[in-house]
Image 1 (cartoon, one colour):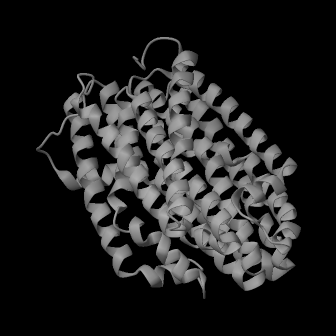
Image 2 (cartoon, one colour):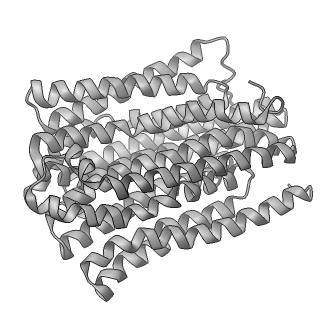
Amino acid sequence: MDLLRGDVKRTYFKYLGAAFGSAMLAAVYSLVDMAMVGQYQGPDGAAALAVVAPVWNILYSLGMLTGMGGSVLYSAYRGQGRVREANRVFTVALGTTVVIACLVWAGLVVWEVPLIRLFGGEGELIPLAQAYLYPVKFCVPLFLLNQMLAAFLRNDGRPALATGAVVAGGVFNIFGDYYLVFVADLGILGAGIATCLGAGIAVLLMATHFLSRRNTLRLVGGGPVFPTVGKIGVTGFSAFFVDIAMGILTILFNRQIMAWLGSDALAVYGVLVNVSTLVQCCGYSVGQAAQPILSQNHGARQGGRILGVLRYALYTAAAFGVGWTMVLLLFPQPLITLFMVPTDQVLAIAPGILRTYGLSFLLLPFNVFSTYYFQAVLRPGSAFGVSVARGLVVSGGLILALPTLFGGQALWWAMPVTEGVVAMGAAALMAHSVRRLRAGKY
């Protein structure tokens, strides 16, 4: 579909459908793992998966760094008619992804136990986390390539293939988890194996794009590599930081929960991490649907089409925010029982925790989308500011300060306050950008 012509609404919602499926089903891996492991091993299994959650944030964020950074530049060059430059960006992004994957792979193999301890693992949670990570640490490149390839396929006119590949991997993961965890009686180790196999299936299916006549992605040599790597890094940093910051926050939460509230609260937080991943993926889907259209039209200086896409994206983000907030307010206990066989102590504390933390979901999709918007219109400074404020400065400060000032239960207010503060800043920056576009300033 030509992103520079045609009906904006139809184009956006076509891309939203594909991006939503891809983003949501990418979260299936951790969600199914949590549900299966929680049912098999109870709150300890859920707590162990909360400990390893930052690993997923690291892997996905690095894939987003090269995927989103490269694909935004790719689409901007395509919109300007500079096809060779666009394909040079793809070439450098692919090579950079492979190099980063090898480095992370080696690091996870060598420093596995120290990382588990850093992420909040203690006592009997450490061997459970090790069992889950045993297959995962040998399949690191698959998870980075999943994110990187999906971003470029969406920008090369194949959003449905990217979605289909992730769907296939996710469906396999669901049935593979059940078989390996329960039927083969491998428990948490089986969940890790199924996750790796699902990721491998998704990468193989996405790779079929390069055999298609519709493929315009080419490996192109020549030109300076490191300046292009720098441009990809600057453009993709905010998308990267959204995910890596989630990992940092999870580490801070894990350590503060164990210090102030104990392992039962950590098990509940394990559920929250997975639900929050779903909500964050809704924000990703809005951003990933809008980004190719925004980037190409920004390159072609089509301000009216940019504003049209922005309007539909904001409506979608608001709908996701209201919907997920209501789920947490109305159904806290069913969510807990879906993800684990809870003890009486866990059931007693879970509703209050989920309802308080769940207020943050009202504005989370908007804040995530805003970073994609600023990237797509080549405002990396604004994207960086929103990402850092949300992912580290405001949130990290509140996570550390609130329990000390008001007691352990105040910890659950850290993210609702963070999302509210960041949303005000993001809205102001976005309004400024809109005024510039209406004045013809790109």
